[in-house]
Image (tube, rainbow, N blue to C red; front, top):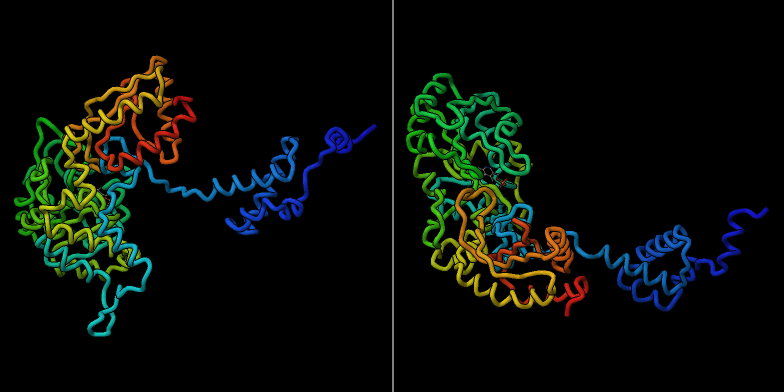
Length: 469
Ligand SMILES: *Cc1c(COP(=O)(O)O)cnc(C)c1O
């Protein structure tokens, strides 16, 4: 009787090569040079193990090729650039704002060099990292002082913890929001150590509700921009100015969490009005919190602007240290904020506004240019048409309003399954194209398509999947 091992060797006399044999082969020199000997050796071992497992035949050349391919795949970045054709300009899952060139340059410079991050160059003394942005933020918002943290969720957490730890924090039931990605106001309150005092009802909160709640001492009154939803119909809230007067009567700070950080009047770019940070400050909020990477168009960051004495308390909170931002983002934020000194050119310099302000007709013309080539590439089983689209700002800004846009709608004679397969093929391109499937069609909203040539070149890879020419 033969043992199993002997049997397979007899059936397959072309045993697999040894690791050394593969490494010595001439073809191995290039991948060793590219990826390093250690990584290539590990990949060869894996390729050999796979060949052994599948009882396949593999010579030295095949093992070299498989190991090199494995390393090639692994070296591609996981954080891939994509074409955002979802119609949502500030898509949280696609990284929100794309940065201005000035911000990219500033960030790259800060990454490459030592920078005077916490160093007062003039005096030769220690400085503060917030100093680089404080004056700019005060200039753009009219606030007395400012501080910067990791994101707006951190800003809200830090404010609540500083002003309301172990104290009552008064907020309307209509504003107890959840923002995507597990930011829920009641949970943040609890983690900050504040005691949530809910007042009013879901649809209506009155001045008298705040007045009654403030009969007992409170750490703060919180007003929250209901970023991602709107209550229509029989609804009422208390305007910030009136609320500030009520809070100040009881010597209680009013904090306004604006969410999106709008620094300019958006109507001048044809967009819907959003309250600006300067307005929130002027209306009497003692502190205003907002994001860096929503409508402001910068990197992820959270800003807290307002009263000097309160900002000083926030900066003394040990949590501030845990939530601070690094030099790269400070550099990008400074360059982004400086663009706001010239609002006339923002619709050219700030990618977020470039995309949001793009006229529908221009987008439709682009769709008409691209439709014939996409039609050729997907073949006769699909029908590509220029379509009206409704873009959204995203990230919780202007949740109800849409922006008239245009794009491509692809339908299939093969029905929904073929459309879903095409959607998948587009996501599998070297630079994934992210659209959405709606009413049986794959819709590509072209509002955010800036590089048409790169898009077309990328589409050519569809040939391999669809077999079209
Ligand atoms: C988006 C948002 C947040 C969270 O901001 P991030 O910058 O995403 O952390 C908090 N509050 C409101 C009202 C928001 O809209």
